[in-house]
Length: 317
Ligand code: GLU
Image 1 (tube, rainbow, N blue to C red):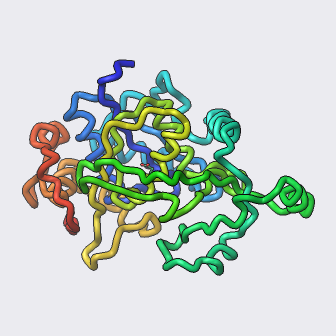
Image 2: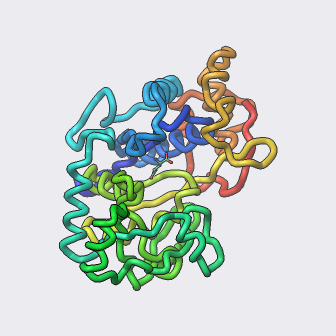
Image 3: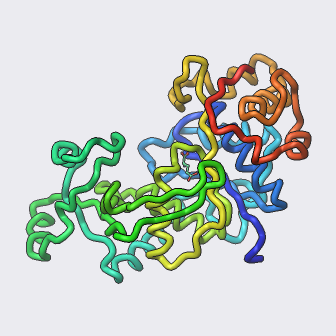
């Protein structure tokens, strides 16, 4: 692999149809990579089996193709760093856990989510991640044995580094996060055995040689945790992060996968062309005129990162 070549990616979770916001993120990730003359990898993040919806993967791929996005490695094509489905990459995550365990960087935690929410003394930092107070950080092996034999199931937590993480985001600028103070030790394997997103995404992006991570702004807050894992694993960090603005609906709400009406199915069924949708997606991000259809090649020719507005725009298809 050429160390300088840009390798971008899109990594959707098949938990429902891609809505127009997800599709706009996919389009932007594709444009970033292609504009840099780079390759584009598609990875299906289907680790959270209970949340995976039947046929969601094939629908997602079909919608991406319909829009004119292509990929050099991924489902249907394969590639040198497969599998491109997280559900088939378990051995790689286990190897990463073993590596972290050898360095004493992970430990079992027996706290339920409900208990942690009760314990949270700091102001809530988002529903899923109150600051972890370190309850199980220093349990003795005797205590751990007792909890195990009582049938308590443990998640695995990563010891957050004391040194703050710094990185530059192409869109939001310089970022600084003392992970230990903001979220504390965080989960890398859930108590039901499922590998946590934070670890899986790092292992995958690193082993797939991803150098450019373009994704939704909702994940900006995860990046410091992920970089802490890159450092602990000894992986080189991606060269570029760009967290692109999310798409909001007309009432200012963020689009969610549960809003089936925001998916592409309805749009496609109503006979609207892919050029019309592409033009609307690009216009909503500020780099195409409102109401003008566009081909993917036209968008690539006119795409300019500097024009990407970091604000909320509604989409009118
Ligand atoms: N699978 C994640 C999602 O669909 C995105 C992961 C990423 O881009 O890092 O929200």
